[in-house]
Image 1 (tube, helix red, strand yellow):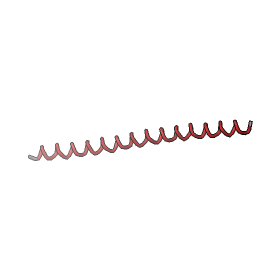
Image 2 (cartoon, rainbow, N blue to C red):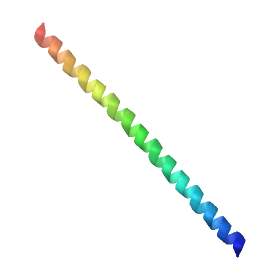
Image 3 (cartoon, one colour):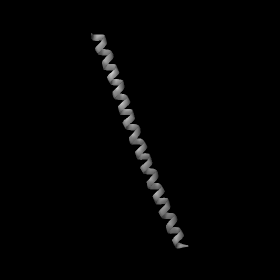
Image 4 (tube, rainbow, N blue to C red):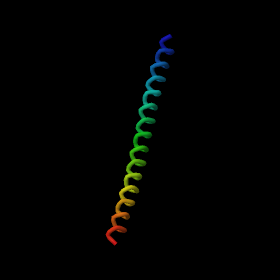
Length: 54
């Protein structure tokens, strides 16, 4: 009985760590994608301004 409880606690701990890690990976991925899309938008805006000034 005690071994089962230990196993359940270990499993819940591992699943919690995996969930936190997955969320961290997803959030970092979305951050990089948002940053890259913002850079692309800024580049297009700069290009538009350059075209207008020319």
